[in-house]
Length: 436
Image (cartoon, rainbow, N blue to C red; front, side):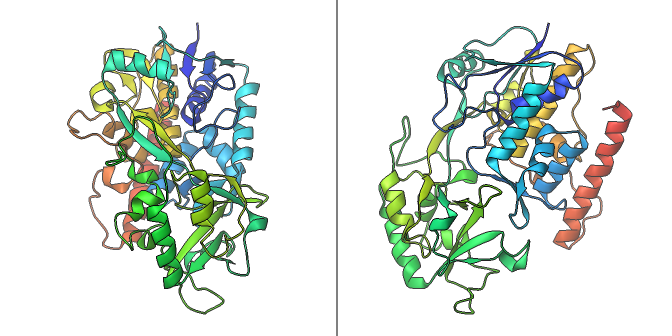
């Protein structure tokens, strides 16, 4: 007898590792390489699709707090992320290839894990974790819908990637906002007002790629991966106060703050490829080349990969799941990853970590767990399973899901540190008392 896991993404791999480390056999099913979703390119497990950024690294941030909690729980993903990180100012960004290679090595070398390349089209019996991701195959999606009702569908977009040696560094410059990081974490392409105005007009009028089953007039796009062209249509200065904000930067060629800035971040540790930060897009490929080449420094850019848009599917978790990620009507079946409505790579990994621990607990005949609500993981677990939530939407790590502090510091940084300190103390006690 073994635990079955469907999906070899971040949540599935983390779940497999957590179960296997407890001496339990795991069958990890992934349909690659025989079949791939529209967003996947690699044959490997744990492929990062949308971005190589795992969000803020500071422990006094919601995202950094989540990652530290995962480290405390012996997360495979965090071990691999820390070993494959690339400079990104205050963010934890990774070399995608190295990150995936490290995870694959750990999974394939684990004697308790069997990786089976097969598309699962039925919900298996026994202890099972469905971590099939936001791009769950059509056949399995239909089975989930038949059993649990309609799911929520959104559309996510990925940003383009360009070669470093094709960026015109006579116009672009290295810098992080407010001098954070090593000073060369980002490449910045500055714009004056005229350049920005011309770029903006080209962007909002550019031709988009068709998306199946997608209402073009009223796109149901998740805010966390909003296509740059959709964001721009909200107003002339929307992206200038968003992904193209120039605050904290000075153009060395003028000595002044630019009107707008595109930032590019390393895709790999060798610094050969850079992605356009915040420029998720669904423009047609020739239009991406035309419009983005208007940005100073990218006039001759060589695009290694163009941006794409793809469907994301989320179940109505508050009606379906318990806070331990098990199904209310069948506590041997678990869901994990973005299909549960947690938003973000590490949030997805954290849900896989908890589903894995609880799948192992169920296998051993022990009581499953939910982390304390003072922790980010615990609060997110409760959010996705809260039956009082009426309009359920994907949620990433944020301080708003946490219980309020007894004494709330006025200073924002002090308040963030208080949240983090409380979490780590609570989690350390929980780990020691439960023998995790």
